[in-house]
Image (cartoon, rainbow, N blue to C red; front, side):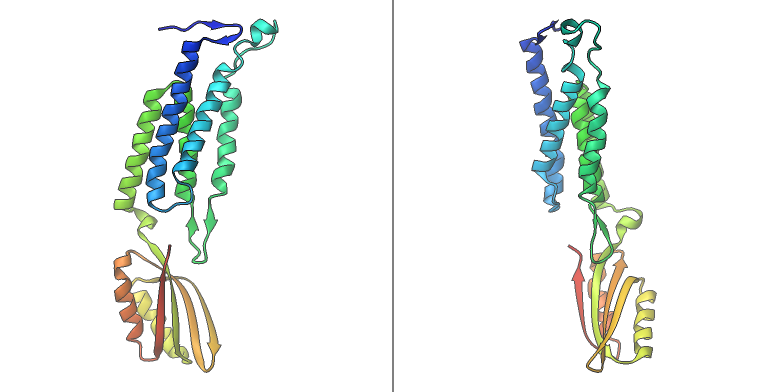
Length: 237
Protein backbone atom coordinates (compact mmCIF):
# COMPACT_ATOMS: atom_id res chain seq x y z
CA UNK A 1 0.00 0.00 0.00
CA UNK A 2 1.34 3.43 -0.91
CA UNK A 3 0.44 6.80 0.51
CA UNK A 4 0.46 10.04 -1.41
CA UNK A 5 2.81 12.77 -0.35
CA UNK A 6 2.01 16.34 -1.30
CA UNK A 7 4.00 19.52 -1.14
CA UNK A 8 1.87 20.62 1.80
CA UNK A 9 2.94 17.55 3.78
CA UNK A 10 1.72 14.05 4.55
CA UNK A 11 -1.73 12.69 3.88
CA UNK A 12 -4.05 12.16 6.84
CA UNK A 13 -3.84 8.38 6.49
CA UNK A 14 -0.05 8.51 6.46
CA UNK A 15 -0.03 10.76 9.51
CA UNK A 16 -2.26 8.25 11.33
CA UNK A 17 0.25 5.50 10.56
CA UNK A 18 3.09 7.65 11.89
CA UNK A 19 1.13 8.38 15.08
CA UNK A 20 0.68 4.63 15.52
CA UNK A 21 4.46 4.24 15.36
CA UNK A 22 4.85 6.68 18.25
CA UNK A 23 2.29 4.75 20.29
CA UNK A 24 3.98 1.40 19.63
CA UNK A 25 7.41 2.84 20.49
CA UNK A 26 6.06 4.27 23.74
CA UNK A 27 4.53 0.91 24.65
CA UNK A 28 7.84 -0.87 24.01
CA UNK A 29 9.65 1.64 26.18
CA UNK A 30 7.06 1.11 28.90
CA UNK A 31 7.57 -2.67 28.87
CA UNK A 32 11.29 -2.25 29.41
CA UNK A 33 10.64 0.43 32.03
CA UNK A 34 8.39 -1.93 34.00
CA UNK A 35 11.28 -4.38 34.40
CA UNK A 36 13.56 -1.57 35.60
CA UNK A 37 10.98 -0.12 38.01
CA UNK A 38 10.44 -3.52 39.62
CA UNK A 39 14.10 -3.42 40.56
CA UNK A 40 13.58 0.06 42.07
CA UNK A 41 15.77 1.84 39.53
CA UNK A 42 15.57 5.60 39.19
CA UNK A 43 14.80 5.40 35.49
CA UNK A 44 11.51 3.52 35.43
CA UNK A 45 8.40 3.32 33.31
CA UNK A 46 7.95 7.05 32.77
CA UNK A 47 11.56 7.69 31.74
CA UNK A 48 11.68 4.78 29.31
CA UNK A 49 8.32 5.73 27.81
CA UNK A 50 9.42 9.32 27.28
CA UNK A 51 12.74 8.34 25.70
CA UNK A 52 11.15 5.85 23.30
CA UNK A 53 8.30 8.23 22.45
CA UNK A 54 10.60 11.18 21.80
CA UNK A 55 13.06 9.08 19.78
CA UNK A 56 10.25 7.79 17.56
CA UNK A 57 8.86 11.29 17.07
CA UNK A 58 12.29 12.73 16.23
CA UNK A 59 13.00 9.88 13.84
CA UNK A 60 9.73 10.59 12.05
CA UNK A 61 10.60 14.29 11.86
CA UNK A 62 14.05 13.40 10.55
CA UNK A 63 12.63 11.07 7.92
CA UNK A 64 9.49 12.92 6.82
CA UNK A 65 9.67 16.45 8.20
CA UNK A 66 11.49 17.99 5.25
CA UNK A 67 9.97 16.19 2.28
CA UNK A 68 8.26 19.35 1.03
CA UNK A 69 11.37 21.53 0.92
CA UNK A 70 12.18 20.59 -2.65
CA UNK A 71 8.78 21.85 -3.82
CA UNK A 72 8.69 24.99 -1.70
CA UNK A 73 12.30 25.97 -2.41
CA UNK A 74 13.54 24.72 -5.78
CA UNK A 75 17.10 23.50 -5.60
CA UNK A 76 16.99 22.96 -1.82
CA UNK A 77 17.76 19.46 -0.65
CA UNK A 78 14.77 17.62 0.85
CA UNK A 79 14.62 14.90 3.49
CA UNK A 80 17.81 13.59 5.10
CA UNK A 81 16.85 10.72 7.45
CA UNK A 82 20.26 10.75 9.14
CA UNK A 83 20.24 14.46 10.05
CA UNK A 84 18.24 14.33 13.28
CA UNK A 85 18.66 10.60 13.89
CA UNK A 86 22.40 11.04 14.40
CA UNK A 87 21.75 13.67 17.05
CA UNK A 88 19.37 11.35 18.94
CA UNK A 89 22.18 8.85 19.52
CA UNK A 90 24.60 11.43 20.92
CA UNK A 91 21.90 13.31 22.86
CA UNK A 92 20.61 10.22 24.67
CA UNK A 93 24.19 9.29 25.51
CA UNK A 94 24.40 12.40 27.71
CA UNK A 95 21.18 11.35 29.44
CA UNK A 96 22.63 7.91 30.13
CA UNK A 97 25.88 9.36 31.46
CA UNK A 98 23.91 11.26 34.10
CA UNK A 99 22.53 7.98 35.47
CA UNK A 100 25.95 6.42 36.09
CA UNK A 101 27.50 7.07 39.48
CA UNK A 102 29.89 5.51 41.98
CA UNK A 103 28.56 4.74 45.46
CA UNK A 104 30.29 4.75 48.83
CA UNK A 105 31.10 1.06 48.44
CA UNK A 106 33.12 1.89 45.31
CA UNK A 107 30.59 0.11 43.14
CA UNK A 108 29.67 1.64 39.80
CA UNK A 109 25.89 1.95 39.55
CA UNK A 110 23.58 2.76 36.70
CA UNK A 111 25.52 1.19 33.82
CA UNK A 112 22.73 -1.24 32.92
CA UNK A 113 20.04 1.43 33.23
CA UNK A 114 22.08 3.85 31.10
CA UNK A 115 22.62 1.19 28.45
CA UNK A 116 18.89 0.44 28.58
CA UNK A 117 17.99 4.09 28.04
CA UNK A 118 20.31 4.21 25.04
CA UNK A 119 18.82 0.98 23.65
CA UNK A 120 15.25 2.22 24.23
CA UNK A 121 16.09 5.26 22.12
CA UNK A 122 17.20 2.85 19.41
CA UNK A 123 13.91 0.97 19.69
CA UNK A 124 12.02 4.23 19.31
CA UNK A 125 14.10 5.19 16.29
CA UNK A 126 13.53 1.81 14.64
CA UNK A 127 9.77 1.94 15.11
CA UNK A 128 9.71 5.61 14.12
CA UNK A 129 11.40 4.60 10.88
CA UNK A 130 8.73 1.95 10.28
CA UNK A 131 10.90 -1.05 11.21
CA UNK A 132 8.30 -2.60 13.49
CA UNK A 133 9.76 -6.10 13.49
CA UNK A 134 13.22 -4.78 14.41
CA UNK A 135 11.87 -2.64 17.25
CA UNK A 136 9.60 -5.34 18.67
CA UNK A 137 12.27 -8.02 18.42
CA UNK A 138 14.79 -5.78 20.19
CA UNK A 139 12.28 -5.05 22.95
CA UNK A 140 11.68 -8.75 23.52
CA UNK A 141 15.41 -9.50 23.42
CA UNK A 142 16.19 -6.75 25.95
CA UNK A 143 13.54 -8.05 28.34
CA UNK A 144 14.88 -11.60 27.97
CA UNK A 145 18.46 -10.46 28.60
CA UNK A 146 17.45 -8.51 31.70
CA UNK A 147 15.56 -11.50 33.09
CA UNK A 148 18.24 -14.09 32.37
CA UNK A 149 21.19 -12.03 33.57
CA UNK A 150 19.44 -11.28 36.86
CA UNK A 151 18.52 -14.92 37.40
CA UNK A 152 21.89 -16.26 36.26
CA UNK A 153 24.62 -13.68 36.84
CA UNK A 154 27.86 -14.11 34.91
CA UNK A 155 31.42 -12.99 35.58
CA UNK A 156 31.83 -10.04 37.92
CA UNK A 157 28.06 -9.58 38.03
CA UNK A 158 27.98 -12.52 40.45
CA UNK A 159 29.66 -10.42 43.13
CA UNK A 160 27.64 -8.28 45.52
CA UNK A 161 28.98 -5.45 47.64
CA UNK A 162 28.50 -4.69 51.30
CA UNK A 163 30.13 -2.69 54.04
CA UNK A 164 31.46 -4.29 57.20
CA UNK A 165 32.01 -2.22 60.33
CA UNK A 166 33.98 -3.92 63.09
CA UNK A 167 34.94 -2.71 66.57
CA UNK A 168 37.79 -4.74 68.07
CA UNK A 169 40.60 -4.53 70.56
CA UNK A 170 43.58 -2.41 69.56
CA UNK A 171 45.68 -5.35 68.43
CA UNK A 172 47.38 -5.31 65.06
CA UNK A 173 47.88 -9.07 65.00
CA UNK A 174 44.17 -9.63 65.66
CA UNK A 175 43.35 -7.30 62.76
CA UNK A 176 45.72 -9.18 60.48
CA UNK A 177 44.11 -12.46 61.57
CA UNK A 178 40.66 -11.10 60.71
CA UNK A 179 41.80 -10.01 57.26
CA UNK A 180 43.39 -13.42 56.61
CA UNK A 181 40.17 -15.14 57.65
CA UNK A 182 38.18 -12.98 55.24
CA UNK A 183 40.58 -13.82 52.43
CA UNK A 184 40.36 -17.56 53.14
CA UNK A 185 36.58 -17.30 53.11
CA UNK A 186 36.72 -15.58 49.70
CA UNK A 187 35.45 -12.26 51.02
CA UNK A 188 37.44 -9.75 49.02
CA UNK A 189 38.34 -6.41 50.61
CA UNK A 190 37.85 -3.67 48.02
CA UNK A 191 38.60 -0.81 50.42
CA UNK A 192 39.16 -0.29 54.13
CA UNK A 193 39.51 2.48 56.68
CA UNK A 194 40.86 1.92 60.19
CA UNK A 195 40.81 4.39 63.07
CA UNK A 196 41.54 4.26 66.81
CA UNK A 197 38.92 5.44 69.27
CA UNK A 198 38.96 4.94 73.04
CA UNK A 199 41.54 2.19 72.99
CA UNK A 200 39.83 0.13 70.29
CA UNK A 201 40.06 -0.21 66.52
CA UNK A 202 37.16 0.85 64.35
CA UNK A 203 37.42 -0.88 60.97
CA UNK A 204 35.26 0.00 57.98
CA UNK A 205 35.65 -2.39 55.05
CA UNK A 206 34.04 -2.62 51.64
CA UNK A 207 33.71 -6.28 50.75
CA UNK A 208 32.83 -8.22 47.61
CA UNK A 209 31.39 -11.73 47.71
CA UNK A 210 29.53 -14.04 45.39
CA UNK A 211 26.15 -14.30 47.12
CA UNK A 212 24.06 -12.53 49.73
CA UNK A 213 23.27 -15.95 51.14
CA UNK A 214 26.75 -15.95 52.65
CA UNK A 215 26.08 -12.94 54.89
CA UNK A 216 25.22 -15.03 57.98
CA UNK A 217 28.38 -17.04 57.38
CA UNK A 218 30.36 -13.81 57.16
CA UNK A 219 28.90 -12.52 60.41
CA UNK A 220 29.79 -15.76 62.19
CA UNK A 221 33.33 -15.69 60.81
CA UNK A 222 33.89 -12.14 62.08
CA UNK A 223 32.36 -12.67 65.51
CA UNK A 224 34.40 -15.81 66.17
CA UNK A 225 37.56 -13.71 66.18
CA UNK A 226 38.63 -13.42 69.86
CA UNK A 227 39.34 -9.67 69.83
CA UNK A 228 36.19 -8.59 67.97
CA UNK A 229 33.66 -6.79 70.17
CA UNK A 230 30.94 -5.95 67.64
CA UNK A 231 30.23 -6.15 63.92
CA UNK A 232 27.69 -4.47 61.64
CA UNK A 233 26.97 -5.50 58.06
CA UNK A 234 25.20 -3.14 55.67
CA UNK A 235 24.03 -4.64 52.41
CA UNK A 236 24.12 -2.65 49.20
CA UNK A 237 20.82 -1.11 48.12
